[in-house]
Length: 197
Length: 343
Image (cartoon, rainbow over all chains, first blue to last red; front, side, top):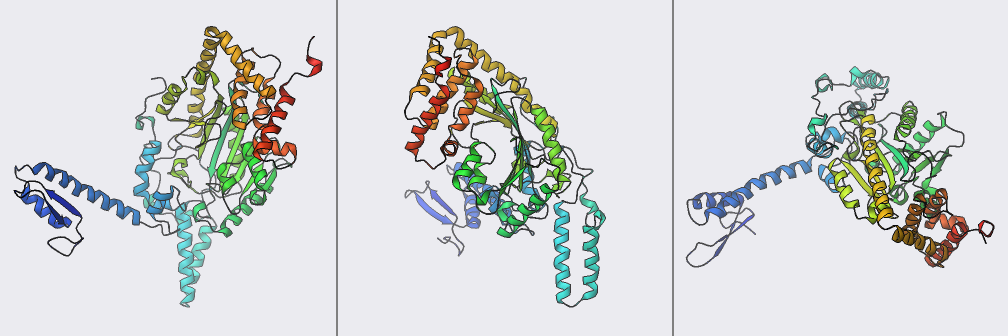
């Protein structure tokens, strides 16, 4: 259904109870609904309704944000955040980086923490950033070969080999170092009472 | 469930599992058939190079028939998910069933260590060692910030699930079990029935486990589950004492009737068997039944399940035939032998 005032889809269906001729129904787009509600808002019986709808407009914003999150796609495995929300399982280790902003609140909800405090393997080459960097370099090398740019391809091959030989500096980004992360993993983060309580 | 180990009248087993994923492959939901095969191969190779017992067995679950898969599930060596899923998947079995490693379950690897009775510390030590051995051969997905990365964010960090299986018939009989569960949930300890997620609680067996895996180290998570167990044991013992002191005759009657049904029924379902075996188990532990031993009862809990029964009979059986065979099997193991009968 289209808005009564323009071509946009009508997302607000307002039943106006204060009309003298009895209730009338308005079908408006978000923009025109805002205009309509802004004009109506002054000390009329409709003001209660106004505030409810204002809230709904704000909630729509939240829904927009959710929709934006849902569209995010992992560059490594191609999983969208919507896929994850539906199935509850991630597609690859890089998802934790690709969907970081959305997964963090989830981790706080589940664990009351966002920082690992347990075992650290001796072999640290299983970092998803490293895997992603390797994949990226390999793709770039393939492209260079396809363009017959063998000089670049050679350099890329050397970089790949350096990473595969265990040169961590060749893939790690100093800005995303883990060392100065704030530790939120403490007990004081949990709102639950202690077992003794 | 051999029926020994500390507090084994109430604590059946202690179990620890770790979730691990190989860095060079996507998580299971994005794995191609080729990926799954390659993962299984890589794990198989890694295991072959470890100094494990020569009898450690690599079982290709995809090649097993329904009955064999169900059999492994009844022994809790594979999960429902591994049993039901499709594609390359495996389980590595220790000859003494002290550990099993599932390959291509929800995560690439699910390593589990089981101990009889309450012995989480020993289970964790064994697990830590096994994990270190595997880690020397495999590259796991890991970041310093989030720890071991898992397919489901509920397992991320340590990937550790610590669980203790308890037999709590008196808390059930005195209707206090719900109260206990609510208290446990408040402190982030989860409670499940015998066969894990989603199934009904059978035979008064409950599994308690940690709900969080991130933000605390493994020892702390083990301790968290460990520290609630003595209180549960105490509650269960108090409830048993109450039943004995308040309704001694009713209780004695109740457990004796349960044994009577198990000894005389001609057809019996596995649910009914669990229900009465649970009562008998409590009766034996309270000294109200003296001609049956706990290891026998523990064995019957396992052997009367559908796949075990069919394995014992050496053939596939319909539900009706199983109920008949189950009744025969129970009588063979519970009815007093002529030589042990007096008069």
